[in-house]
Image (cartoon, helix red, strand yellow):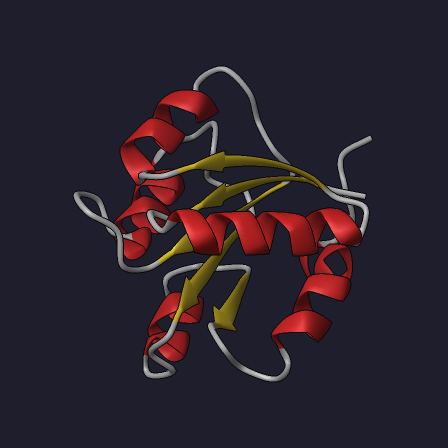
Length: 123
């Protein structure tokens, strides 16, 4: 399956999302802010990043823009996650691989089919 970097500032959300993603066979690393995640990306590259839009400091959308400007991470699949459905269109237009609506009934299905949506995993 995939190696996922999960970025969310709420410990309960990180815990639940991490456990759910692991239940689908993924390896999950977590960060509580986007700045720390950018530092991690300098040393290791996950298959996909799942980032909450509302974070202290750098937002999830700002994180997406930063990954797109960096040659090393420009093709890294980034999934933006938000409780605001209005962010979906903007996220996809900005280059997000997918948009996950927190609390939506299809969230579990999106997790289950994560590798289908990002084109598989690294060799």
